Length: 227
Image (cartoon, rainbow, N blue to C red; front, side):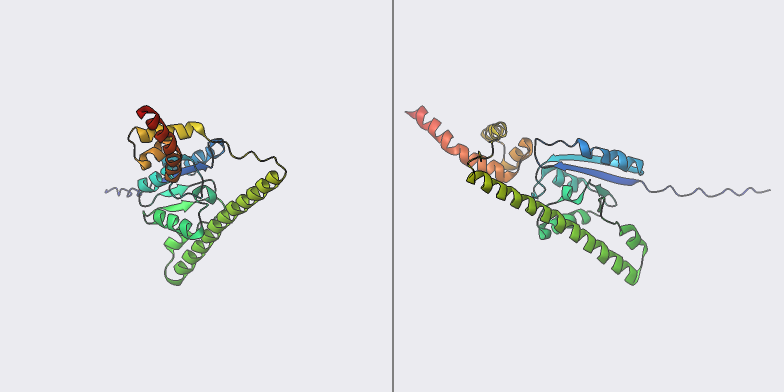
């Protein structure tokens, strides 16, 4: 008697996620967002990387964001707490950012945005086109809302500053002397602008601005040394 062996079921593909967390300033912490990784694991994802950043979402040159995009592999999913953690950029720039993620064969998974990608992948013809169009529209709307919220906050801040100035109560923003000193030290140590920005945890534009401010002081020291 021949015993027929049941063919082994193909193993389910491993779902891979990369977690991106962001807050805007050094004074804020990422603790609230730490649960994202646990939620992804509970949903059956293998977490290939966690990227933590303290930088404005209105900046495109965030080191950890760029590192994550560079690390992405086809089929992976980028997970964030909200879409504004990924971007508060103007819509055209935000769409380019999303396109760079999709170009790696990866996709976004963000609460509040209905994910139709899996349905679209299974559909054919017109239904697939419709699902992809709806997904793009929902994402575009979310990106624009994130930018609008950023601009509203900036406008309220500007109005608050104007009122404080009028009342004689505005003292201005305190200079982050520790970061400025680190930037100057790194540049004087021969680091490039890009390397300095990454090591100091700031933008390249801030590095250039701090160096420009520091040049007169450095020049004065050299002049005194020669006298």
